Length: 172
Length: 182
Image (cartoon, rainbow over all chains, first blue to last red; front, side, top):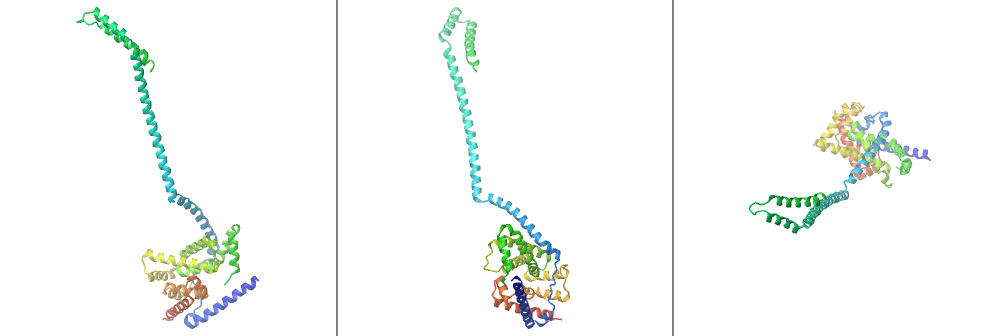
């Protein structure tokens, strides 16, 4: 069956060749006398290697196209939008967290100073004003007004300092 | 010209396990006719080599989508012809040369071409062919050297049989005129 098919093709080709030869004889008689030959040359080795070279190029192209596909995938507008959104969200989260930290720090500082002030008030509250006034008055009374007794002032200061040091700085 | 081998190649190519084998068969079957078809258009061996490889790569990439309403043979020739003509076009655009200069350049390269082994008469004939306009040159080579039927050429080039016959007739007359000079 295959042989029959091949002989049909050969006959068909020969028939076509004859037609072409007759045709050229009519149109260009001088040309038809020139021997028809293939003047272009390529070695047998070239054709032996050609198939392998093509297969190699195809596999190289496949590798390159995989990389290019990957790159072009990331260059798609949808991806670019998604990536931009991720960047914007990340930056926003970062700044939000940072401002939150600063706020907490500021708040903690405020609380810190509030505590100190409250404690100072407590310390001031703890000072017995009547006793202090009494001491000062008795000292003033026992000394002349023109010659103020530094001892009384020193004692008063010492009292305040003692109370203050004991209550504030030891706690801090 | 329905070809059983082409049908076998196509069905083997569609099976992933025998794809490479089928493609190898296809290349072995068509490499020589496609090489000489392109070579007659672009003349230079290295350019032909690149174009032949590109043609077969394109065939490999698109054979899956090949619809059998056309013959594989004419489909392959169409790809090869388009590749070769696009190459000449890009060459013309690259060097800003008018059509005739590229053909003249090809004609001048014939004599020194190590892959050209024709005698003086063959050289004269090839130079005469290179004086033809692109389409006439293509038609003349396909009919005279590749012995194609007008119907096959019509399918490959997308031109009517009548127009092809007229082109061939004019081309052969022009060549006859040149070869009969001196």
